[in-house]
Amino acid sequence: MKSRLMQQHDVAQVIAIEQSANHYPWSQQNVEDCLKSGYHACVFYDQADEILGFFIVQQVVDEAHLLNICVKLRVQGQGLGREILDQIIDYATEISAALIVLEVRRSNHRAQQLYLQAGFNEMSVRTDYYPSENGREDAILMGLDLVPTSFFKVN
Ligand SMILES: CC(C)(COP(=O)(O)OP(=O)(O)OC[C@H]1O[C@@H](n2cnc3c(N)ncnc32)[C@H](O)[C@@H]1OP(=O)(O)O)[C@@H](O)C(=O)NCCC(=O)NCCS
Figure 1 (cartoon, helix red, strand yellow):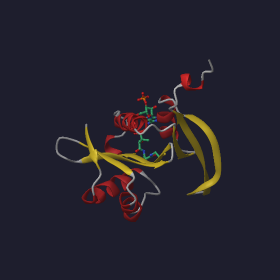
Figure 2 (cartoon, rainbow, N blue to C red):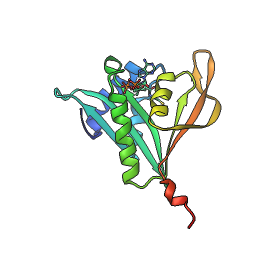
Figure 3 (spheres, protein in one colour):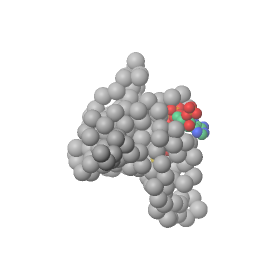
Figure 4 (cartoon, rainbow, N blue to C red):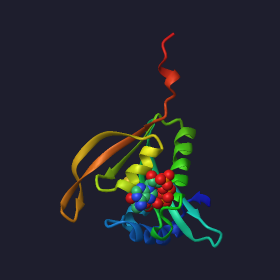
């Protein structure tokens, strides 16, 4: 799968992917605001130039906040999510982020499994953070520490 920076003209395809994969998808405005703000956003596309996944990361001082990662419903479960997450980790390392943080719905076991396999840990819970079919739903705050352990070693 190839990847490149997300452009304004990608937004329609990106929103279609959001809508295919989420009960509460981001709006077109949400994505456009991220582009205007200069957040790091990439799309992943196949040989026919069809976008199949994307991510958006906001750098906040020495942290990389993963705001969105999404794979088109039709191609989920085939390894693209992990490929995208690996690229996010590479980007965060390149910008010398100490930590990658994200929020994930308590019911989103698939995403949590992906993050846990990549080495993320559960950091805390934001109670009733998201709207849900049953009222509200907790967000699990997860993080991946990128600071090498040796950094903390005392001689
Ligand atoms: C979460 C998401 C990005 C994962 O992408 P994907 O391409 O399906 O994931 P992959 O095929 O790379 O699978 C990676 C890991 O996810 C987990 N996973 C994938 N499919 C799963 C399923 N049906 N059930 C449970 N875990 C699953 C597994 O741990 C898997 O690793 P493994 O294949 O070695 O067991 C994708 O499901 C998605 O876009 N979901 C909707 C949007 C979303 O929830 N984003 C995250 C918001 S925090």
